[in-house]
Every structure is written in structure tokens, then in C-alpha cells.
Figure 1 (spheres, one colour):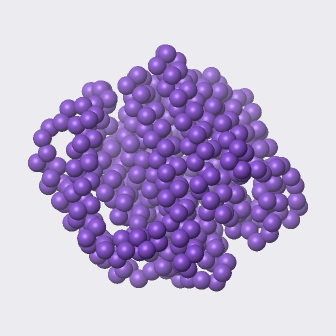
Figure 2 (cartoon, helix red, strand yellow):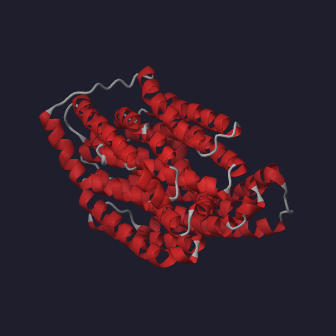
Figure 3 (cartoon, rainbow, N blue to C red):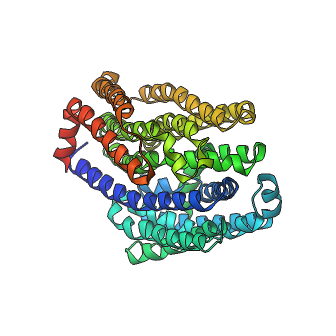
Length: 468
């Protein structure tokens, strides 16, 4: 990377990290409150409805937001065209979910009212998606703080207040709608003004991109939601509740770190490719950063997985599931990082092929494992993700996007050594009661991890300091 692009990438990563810390911190707060106030059935119902909305959000955009970062034409003209089509798609999906809420609710064991209320958020998230895409193109993640984090804070406040007043799962659906409405409004305040329009050539470019990336985006969303839907159908909402608590906790390092780095990596690689530069150096830096940071977080979470009983003894079965999903999250973060460069380099068909392979393997595994319980599902998730890692590396190598594997040798050795050290120290830590004790134990283990990893990766640390 050139110095200018590298500096913009680091600044973008820091701002996007700050945005995610706030927004995902809000999600953690919601998870803690819901785990304390709701039963397993209640949390399961919430997870099922949120999964439906997540799938709807991706279907309405069909991955087209990425083309705004890659286009060589007027990005505002293209963004206006995308905004028009996305709003139409969001409104159509919202109407469809409202009309089919009864049969969907019966199939999944979720109240139809929750589905109808949550569906109202879709047209508003369509607007926010285009506004965020314009910020991504310019690596201007600073402006995302107000709409993204601000909207999430408002939605979280509404959810927690309503849950405390006894609204149950309905509190989450109302909070989703409040967040969705606030996001585009606050984005306009932050200066992200995109107006609906229509340009035939822009529509054709967006359609060409959507024809390949759109199915990939839908498949990617199914990959992280189909387990909820399958568990709900086979085992019921109570099992979804146990699984979703573990998944929400294991999901945090992936969202806060891997998704942040991936969000910056796509426009960075797109800009490098537009200027005719090699991207392998950027791939190495982002891969190393993703592994170093997420590994530590996942190791600590796995070692403290039995602390889920702090939310109540009824959540004890979530502990082994959480440990297994940490391995899943680490592998998924690696795949997400590499998928960004594959897509940015224009190899969207390979990205789609990898995602479809993943989905087919997962659906096949779920058909066999779901009836054996949520731990079996978690094991299948982790195994399939790590089978995809060497296949994705082969795709990177085939297209000249990979770095020499030996470059990661020292990093990998450091990660294994640090993980072993954390496991040894965890056995020496005294038993802790309460959230404060768990947090102190987590901080102690993170300190051990950093003390081992950082000295073994001085070069990576110097690169980061030099960019700041």
C-alpha cells in the first residue's frame, strides 16, 4: 500500500472500530438484559425474528452497495439509482413479511405480531445502507459515528426500557424499528445526503454486479441465520435461546474486529486495484491484524465460557456451545477478510462459489446434526468453516492475491504459544463470582496473551505505529 492509502486505511479502521465498539457494546447490553429478563423461549423468539429481518436486509440490497465503492462513474448518480431500487425492494419485502407473518410464525414458533413490527424497519435500513456505502467509498468512517452508533444507542435505550417494563420480545422489535428510522435521519445530519434518482447506465452496472454478488450476499446471510431457523423448526424456541446466547457472545470479536477490518479492506483493495498496484501486502497486513486481535479475544471467551451461568443457571448448557463457536468465529473472521480482496479484485463468481459451497455443506450438516442438539450444530459450524479456509487460500493463490504463507509463521507460533499460556494461567485463577470477577479474569488473560504475542510480532506492531 502507498503511504497515503495506508494512513487512510488505519484512520478508517480506528473510526470504524470506534463505531463498532459503541454499536456492538449496545448489542452486548441488550443481550445481558434479555438474558436476565427473558426465558430461553423468549430469547429464542427474539433471535428468530431478528434472523428474518437480517435476511430481508440483505435481500433488499442484494450486495449492490459494494458497487458504489468500485464504480468508475459518478458515485452519487449511481448511489441515487441504487437508493431508488433499494427502497422499492425494502418496501416490497416489508409488505411480503407482513402478509406471510402468520404462516412464518407458525413454522418457526414466533408470534406473527413480532414479525410484522420488525418488518417495518426494512425500507429505512435500505436508505441507511446507501448512505453508509458512500462513506465507505471515501474511507470516511468518522461520519458513521453519528448515524450508526447514534441510531444503535437510541434503539438500545428503547429496547431496554420496554423490556424492563415487561414488554418481553416485543421490546426488541420496537427497538429495531427505532434504530432503523434514526439511522438515515442522523446520516443526513452527518452530511451523507443521497437523493433518489434513476440513470439507465448506472442501473445496468448495479444489475451486473448484483447478478453475481447479490446471490453471494444472500447466501452469506443465510449462513449466519439458517442455523437459528433450523434449530427453531426442529428443536423449538427454547433451544434457539440457548444457542443464540452462545452465538451472540462468540459473534462479538468477529463483528468488532474482523468486520471492521473487512469493511476497510474492501475499499482499500479496490483503490489499489484501480491504480494498478499489488494487493498481496495489504492482504498480509489485514490477515495478520485479524488473527492477532481476534485470536486473543476468542481464547479468553472460550476459557471463561462457563461464566454464562452468571445470567442464570438455566443458561449452563450454553457454555460448551460457546467454546465451540469461538473456533467457528475465528475461522469465519479469516474467511471474511479474504473474501473482501476476492470481491474487490473483481472475482465475484469465485466468491459466490465459495459461499454456495459453504451453504450446501452447512445445510447438509444441519440435516444430520440438528436433532442431536445445539452443541452438535456448533461443532458442525466450526468444522465446515475450517474446511473452507484452505479452499479460499487456493482461490487467493490462483488469482495472484496471496502472500507467501511463511510470512505468517511467526504470528501463528505466537498465537499458539499465547493460547497455551492463557490456558495455563486460567487454571491458576481463583474462582470468581459475579460479572466484575469475570471481567477481571478476562482482563488478566488478555494481559497474558498480549505479553506473549506482541514481542513475537514486533514487525507488525511497528507497521501499525508507523501508519498512525
